Amino acid sequence: MGIGELVGGVYDSYYKEGHPYKDYNLDKQGEGQFWAAAVNPNRKDDPEAGACDRLPFWVPDGDTPKEPLAVSPKVLAEYAYDELPVPGTEIKMTPEGTTKVNLPTWAWLDKAKFKKVSVTASIPGSGLSATTTAEPVSLSIDPGTKDAETYPASGTCPIEDGKIGAPRAKGTPADTLPPCGVKYLRSSGDGPYNLQATLTWKISWTSTTGEGGELPEGEFGGDQQVVVEEIQSVNR
Image 1: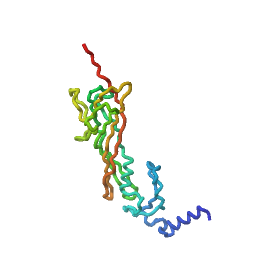
Image 2: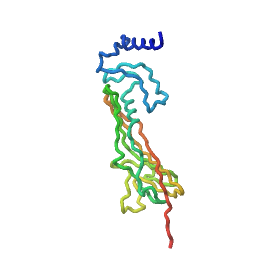
Image 3: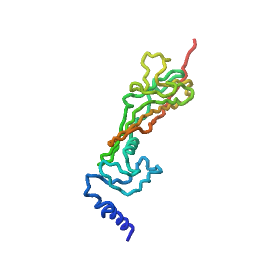
Image 4: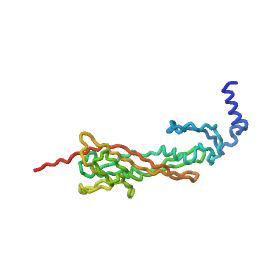
């Protein structure tokens, strides 16, 4: 008997001849489905990616498998977390692109762009799904140099009234301090400073089983180049 026949016989015994299934549970179609191991393509290199080596097993619809490595509502929520369409963190600034030494630069985020985002992950036919939601909560600014001051002093701008920071209104005195921003104390010289803006997102999840809760906060950021020039003055 060849290896193929031997393996086929084992599977027939397991799924067809009643040990423990009979005729692949064809008489229970619509009442459940077989679950089998699968690897999240986003985490295929994780050390535990191949830890689930159990043969496919039957689960009635609506049930959560009593298998430590089986997909649970929280696992679905974590999978949805990986797929959240979080926008890139690019702040707007006044002045834009080029600023002056000792001039407060105002920073803010586009309110329409930085809103709650949600993704739902589900197992087709099982009735099991989880929805993960990300909500922006604060913006942190790293000026890219020690020769700078941030506003607030912590460098973390909270969300207030659904907004992070604000543009400088026309007529605002140049030395007015912004609710969110930075003031450079030294010229950037021949090259720009790499300002880094990092947005912190609060992550929560709910599921069709009633389970839910919090997941670790997400931090997403990016660099922006800022040219800082000396203020030219003329003495007469």
